[in-house]
Image (cartoon, rainbow, N blue to C red; front, side, top):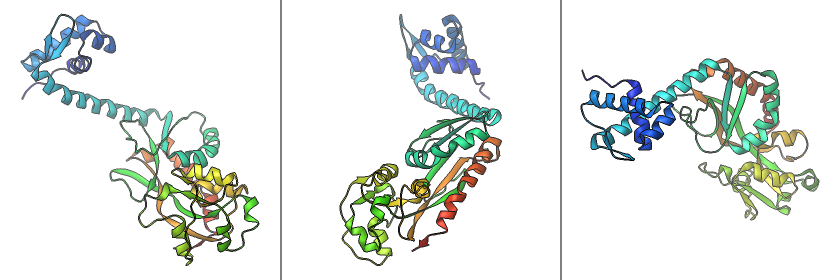
Length: 307
């Protein structure tokens, strides 16, 4: 069986091939250029072929080196990511969470002080983005994702079943007695759910109410929290998402005049690498989210769902 070169030699080769400089690679690895050259020679002896063309002030990969480099880089990257993932499980001194910007701004961030107070030794880190981050590559522990499907090979737990209903500033609500009265107000359009099949925002709600109206034009937002902010300022009526507006409804900053609501065919899920869900940090987060969602469940119980 072929002997693989020592790990130190492979690491030296990867750094030198990436920089195309022995000096830069030596500086990155905190070794002397002579020590790095020794490791490269060791790799070439194990391989039985040169991997670099040595020039006066630079180096180039040979054909063999260019073939070897991407595989070595991928292998070392896999080892590094696996090591980081295991270390995160062992130390459990920090918790990195990713969620969408709207959910982070309107639900997660305003409540997190209670979780931080209950877990003072746990460092919290956040990545508010709609981009699906990779748990290992991006060093993410927990993802709160909104969508329709579970992701295979991960722990998935539904935490919020989303629904919508018309909402507005209290100053506008006093003149609204019937659903037809909504047509007297400017419409705010939230496009954050447009990716869902058979979903057309206001038209979907009016259809469920068996009301056929030409939907009015109005400002359209790709982010639910931006649409909510306009409604909070009195700018019109919004088909608001309960997860984003729950706190504003509870505090009376927004009013939902009708019990009729629509369940959205998507949910928020808490996801993490398999096995991480039972670690103390993630278990604490899951328990805290469950407790915080009791008020959301109480609000949902007051609704008359049309679907």
